[in-house]
Structures are given as C-alpha cells and as structure tokens.
Length: 620
Image (cartoon, rainbow, N blue to C red; front, top):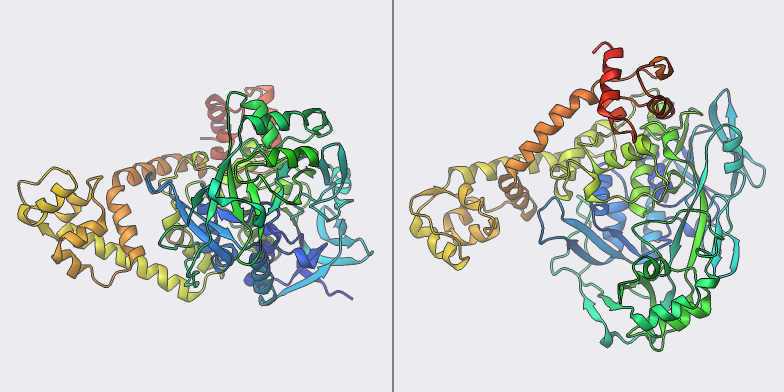
C-alpha cells in the first residue's frame, strides 16, 4: 500500500509543515502523516504571526526557503512593525492572519510541492532497528518504512484538556490525543516530562461594543515577511484594546477553588511569559487591571480571539468575568478557554541538527522540544527537515551559529541549557542582536539556502543586487559634500545644530534625529543621485551607516568568541576521566555532550575554570 519514503514527518502543525516542505524541496520523498487532514497548519492559539523576536525568526525562515513568511503575507489582515521607536535591532514585524485562509494557503502550497505525500492516521509507534529509526506504525496497523522520521507532535502526546473541574483527553479542542509514542521512547531510554499551555475563550464579535475600546489599526504602509514579491492586502482590519478591572478579578477569584491549576490537577509547568489570567491576578495582585488585545479571526468571520485572557477556570466563571469587561457586557461565547497538558522531551537529548542522540535518523521539532509559539516551531521544523534530508544522503549537516540567526540561538539554547518551562524567543536571548536584525535576514541566510538548493537563482540574484545597491548608496553618501547653506534650514527645522563648514552627507546622516528619506528630500543633489533605488535598499544602507560602530563591535566579539566555537570536542570524549572537573560539571557535560568548547561554556552550571580544564585536556 505504501512505498518506502526518505522521510516521514509526524504531525502537520507549523513544525511539521516546514519540515515536510524543506525536505521535499531539497529532493527527499516525504510522507506527512496527520490525525486530521482538515487541520493542517491550524493556528491553535492566536491568529497572528511574528512579534518581538518572533518576527525575526519568520523572516529567517523565509530567507532559508521556508513557507511561513509567504503564507503569512498571503493571509494577513493587518500588519504592524513593532518597536519602531527603538533601534533597528528591536524592530519586529507582526501580522494578524485570517485563520482559515492561513491554513488553506499552507495546505495548497504543500499540495503543490513535489515529493510530498499525505496520509491521515495516528502514529502510535516507531520502527527502530539497530538504534536507527526506520519508519512508523499507525493506529490502523500500517508499517510505513522510511530512512528518517521527524516527530512534530505539538501538544498531542498524552494531551489532557482542563476546563475547571472537568478534564478529558485531547490534543486540541475537539481533537483526540496521541498515545503510544511517549511510552515507546521512554522504554528506549528517553527522558520525558509534562508542560502545559492554555488558550482564551473565543467570542462572537457581533456581541461586543467596540466604542468602549481603543482601536489599534495596522501600519499605513503594509510591510510583510517574505523577501519575495508576495502581493499584500489593499486594506486592513483593526484590532482593539480593552482592560480587566478589579470587579473582573473578584469574579475570577471565586473560581480559584475549582481551578485545575490551583487545585493541583495540572502537573505541567506553564509558559512564564504568557500566563493565564488567573495566574496574572494571583502573581501580580497589586495590579488593578490587565490589558486585553481583541483580535479578529479573519476577513469573513465574526469570531474574536481574546488575547490576554487565557484561562482554565470553569465556564460559568469565565462568562461572568467576561461580562464585566468594558465592551463585553453582552458577550456571547463561542468556545470557553482551556488549559492543555502534554508530554515533551527535554531537548538536551538532541544534537544541534535536532537529531536525537539515542536513536539515529530520528528528529524532534516544535513543542515536543519544550518550545511555545508558531514561529519557534516553524524554524525547528525547517531545520529538522533540512537535516533529515542531509543525513539520509550522507551530506554535511546544517547548523546555524548564534551569530548567524535567531534560529541558531534558539536551537543552541535548547540543546545546551534545556528548558523546564515552555521556551519562547526574545531579543534579549540573542547576544548579537544588532547583527541579527529582521531587515537583513536575506543578506545573512539566502546564500546558504541557495547553496543547499532551497533558494532559487532569482532569490540569490535579488540578494546580490541588494548588496551591490547598498554599497553604492553608502559610497554616494560618503562622496557627497554638503554646504551649510544647503542643509542648515533643514537642520533648524529638526532643532539640530547647524553646520559651519562643508560636510559629507554620511556624517549628517549619523545624527540620531536625521533620517535618510528626510535628507534625500532636503538635498536635490541626493534626490537625483539616489533615484532608482528601492525603499528597502535605502533603509538597509541607512541602518548600516548609522549603526556601523555597533555592528563592527559585535563582529569583533563574534570573532573573539569563534575561537571557542571552532574548538570541536570529539563525540567519544569521556568527561568522567577528568578528575579535575567537579561531579556536577562531569555529569552535565556527559549528558549534553557539547559539540564545541563554546557550547560547553553555555551549559548551565559550567564555569570558566571548567572550560579551561577542558582546553588543557584537549591539548589547547
């Protein structure tokens, strides 16, 4: 019934879809197995992509040839560039998506991808021979052979849904949990644990009074995530902001005695940075209100996502509390909020390729590794799919450094430090965030993608043209002399100090209150010489000029730190023999088995003296 496949991907969420696409586009024959063909790429939580640091990840996925950026641009109903008031290292794109259009577009793109087959069934176990994954066993009893398997099970592994005192098995609302895989992997020697996440109620937008809320429209200029020329919407839908109050909090507290979280019925640890509303009012008792972000689910639906009101309290308490929120007095609930508890596998059991250390040719991606968020899942899926393809063809693995991409930071954090709570990406996690901006993901990663065979020649040509244009623009700014009489009127308008002698345009642009588009408008000679360059090329040149000092400092730091990153540790290195290391250091190094001295230095509990001892034993 089934041919042999190169790669089987289990689960069709954001990680599974990217894994299937990347492996197939590299040339592997892929089978994507999902329990429900109607929920491929479903946005299980809020209908949005991107945000702080997450937007950078989506742009990196796009630069590497993934689909998430394209799908987001094709299904967006609103776009905003967050943190514009801060430096460009903090700028983060975010888009509201049409939930149904997002999933439909993903499925359509996968169906148009050569080498991807689909099958609807639950995977209940793996075929493992001689320490290698060789396929899967489905709920219907089919044994499907493959050279590698990628597990992207999301919240489905032994998932339990909690609403007040009620709980039942499930991986998502109205969908059953997946069983069998955890038990088999534990029997093979893997360590597993439990995490939890939650989701808020969905409500009827027709029952809300938006006049009592603050409108939040999209940016006037609609940007996007993909570096390809994906058409953008010509109009946008607004989101809205409202707030809880003390009366809302008092009603919520009446349900605490029936809360699965406070009653101890949930063992899993929840996301620190996206807590439930009951957790917020318990942990931050001094706060009189909490912001709620009211998000439309799409162009042609009245369903609304109440961001900030994630809860597993009883339905009657949810309803009574919602009715006290300004604008929600007549609210009708489509679906109550709930918490979901599920199995995950601490990611220190993985290599940087996302292949497991215990079983070769078995890869994990997404929430199975303890992460939370569509974007974190998507980038892991992309890398797992790539590396599964590389492995079955005996090709070099694809590993991104921390200085190359947020994706590299995420994977290195997971592998080196592990996580005991749902891991979410932030800009603060990246020590080289000035280099890892959302505007230059194509310049950083397209060449790698092109060499692998994911990025097209057209994409590569576009990046080369952008690099050449930026060099030319910077040279024009360096060569263009500006007289005081040409510029002082403009500087006066900005309340910036006038110049008293001729200066180069580049030096004037270095002023924090001067932007390149303003300078071009103020100087006819620049208007003429920079005619024909795109807005994106001009912005990139401006950032490189303004932040040149900081960019170079980070490059120097990368260069210094690369000395440790380049010192590889043999996989067979026996840390137990090094008596100079403490017991804790030996135990952690032996468990993680770091690939380089740089990775070893980032393991929690490893101090600089431990690294020095390792260097001595390695003959350094």
